[in-house]
Image (cartoon, rainbow, N blue to C red; front, side):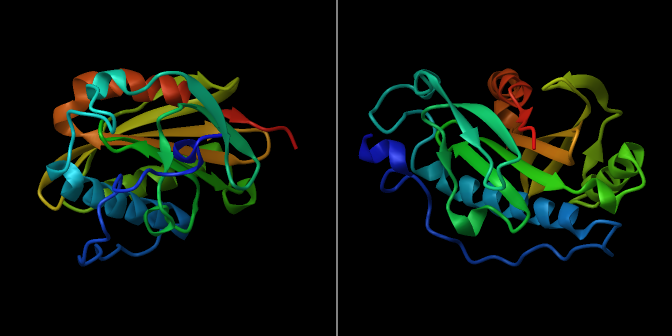
Length: 218
């Protein structure tokens, strides 16, 4: 295994920035949902500050579009789910993951990121209750986030719904896609995001990654 495959290469991530975290709204039924949103804002802010380093070339000087070659299966830290990710994607440093996240990976040069959060079914009346709580949390993101009507789909053999959220992070237009999965042993948020200006190229790639989500039987 090469040194690069074990973790981020030197200089991949910008140094932590000093900023004021958004003030959360009154907590909904599950505070873990808001924790996830705050973590997303912090990660995206760090990515935006890193844009000055390189967004059109990969670490070896190759065009960003050519960086992702091959895939690998990544298991969430709680052992309850997994995703298939491009091999060039790296786990984000601990300070950018968020307490509730069990998987947070990204490709900084392409501004593409994905996060998985596991929620216990016992914390909600049913999946509809979980979905309603998630929507409320999405709409409570900073800078007047807009949430679409949602799209029903199947992910990993389980019923799911995907919401698109548009918002601004420190004045930068951003896009989030929240895929809520009704698993056998839990509810899952599979959240992907990018900068709005990268939507055309990023959305199909992120949708494909989310489609590889699997709940691990337990």
